Length: 195
Ligand code: GDP
Image (cartoon, rainbow, N blue to C red; front, top):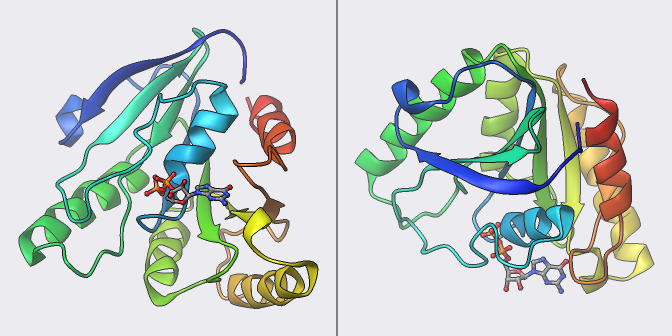
């Protein structure tokens, strides 16, 4: 799928704002601060395509990017900030649920997990939604440069254990550091191999 220039297409706040489902797409989800913007920027080679810092709790949009003419890259709003008002969370959850269960061209979701933190309850919630929507998903561990080899081993074990509860999960994790460029080519190759 990774052919041609990456450009911002639009921010979507409701289902009727989605672009036509006329090409394959992949989406990225993660707790706020998991490193999603940094990863998308590293992946696309664009410095500030996805905003590198999001305001906690701000009402957020589903951001669509074009991967050339052939595919979409979809940046889902970060989740899990306790500060977000209940109504905002509810609206976001409804949009997310509708998006995940109603997007036939969605090929794979990448769920970002901070290597230092592992899978938390809010991550399980998203993963359950992905299971129920039958969207195959793959965990991307972020900020690998922030921990040592031993801690990384522990994280990988915790995440793999957690994934056993989720039938839609791929068992293989992608270990990345946007800072150091680790795993970025691998992730790009995974996306390129989808069609
Ligand atoms: P988002 O909220 O998920 O979009 O997260 P951001 O991409 O804004 O990253 C959150 C924080 O983590 C920022 O301070 C980033 O500079 C930092 N960060 C993101 N990726 C990495 C990484 O690979 N290594 C390091 N050391 N820091 C990172």
